[in-house]
Image (cartoon, rainbow, N blue to C red):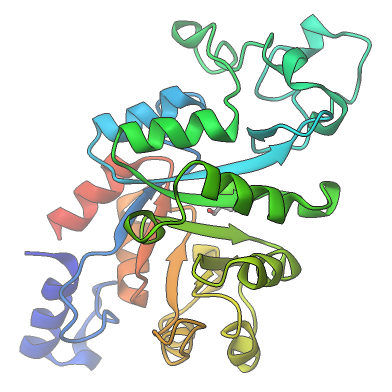
Length: 289
Ligand code: G3P
Ligand code: CA
């Protein structure tokens, strides 16, 4: 039985007040399991934001993958979390004189020389930083869906238009693909712009706006995606009570949940999606309920 069905059944049998289970706040009658999303790919098991992490998510049977997009000095969109290359590549060895090794200060040809896997495990040595186009190609090949984060948009003027153009070029703005992609950001301005450029694209705001501000956000975002440590069942209900720019209730994808207890807590809050480095752990927790 799915987690929310379990919660609803227990609630019906015992009454809400007597329950200690973290599942009790699940919305009654909603039997859908939250969507599981592999954070930066299956990043507990393969180097984050690489094609290997995308493939690992697919191998685990996880259909949604999250990533982070930044831009090189010569304008290539690349998939990297940090604005510096230092943590997830060997840039300090390859380009020792170029501290602080900002993504925006390197050409893609330079970044293509870097090893983006050896820091994680020697078995991934030789893994490369993917362009967004390469990444989208692998997502398509694996029949996966993408939660695309525009990272640090203030560093990359015009990146929203560039991403929307690339989505079109890669064939992701047709009716068959639009349900398979969400563009998210910590920047409300960035999301407003994406919504203005292509209103059909589903958007997600990263953060926890006060409940009183949610109706304003609902003008340009379809999801509110908060840290799991910042929410409650009441907050999630407040989000669900708003209708987004496409006329549907706002949804909640929460992050980053890597263990069973927190999974149950998130389910209890009534979230629609769980973003995790360990999708197998979250899925097992959902199914074991
Ligand atoms: O998708 C949510 C999460 O990715 C936001 O935080 O720092 O991992 O990009 P961060
Ligand atoms: Ca992210």
